[in-house]
Image 1 (tube, rainbow, N blue to C red):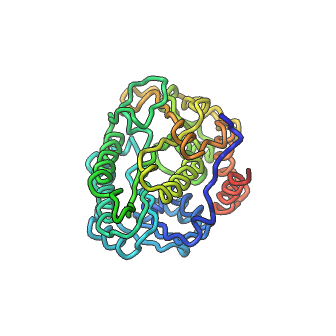
Image 2: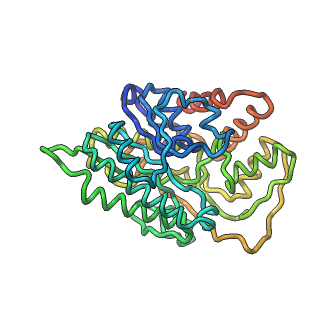
Image 3: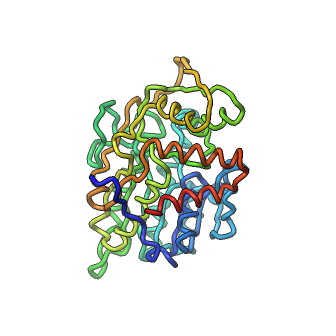
Length: 363
């Protein structure tokens, strides 16, 4: 594989496109909205209010540039009315309860948000009946985890131990059902609506402040010169910078728009295998860029999380000409330096984010 080549979104395709992002006030949704605005798309967003005043969405100050709608995806009628009004050309569905630990505390809310919320968006698109492409974002955790070293392929069995993972696997079943039963069907020889799902590995990058996520936990400790607590040091994850899967989502949407049926099936987006590293390795790499110390939390009452998780990205490489650009060290360096520039240099969040985006697109 040629690691020096990377396919990029076609900015001319996105110029003037009417794009809806659900969950646009979240971490990934904020980065995606910024990228779409940079390509001169007409961006609408449906989401809850940002969780914190210092959330990335607020700090980017892009609310004024977006058709910004506050709505819970569990509200079927509001979702239907908003999508009828927006009439999107393309929908990126990112709205979710995205945290494994939180799913143990709020399992019903997690299932309602991740499954019924997805169904509400699917139904709104179906009933709207305008020409539309939908990319539904799930997770690498949708697969039944066998704790093996092999990367999961898109055809592997779905599953999920914890409420978050199982709810996302269930949302994949709903997406497949709506696709087969109602969408991707031809009218006058053409498919009016086409949808697919995208399964991303563990996403990191500047601006994430979520609770119980490793990078935000690291940065919070480093900012106050406190030792970093590591919950699961030997757990292995497919770490990737947030721009990597977003690039894949955008390319997938372009291909799906042109060839609606051929690309209407799930795609994995993760790093190359050498970026599958343990949590301890991630912390070690992080403190190379921002000096600090850590300790291992030996609490035996921690909620279950998968020990080994890896994705096969051969399909995306072959059919989308997509592949990761930044290796493990570069990904960690970019991420930690984003926070350092904001903390020490008082550089604005939007300048730091645009610097990373421009660097990503340079070659």
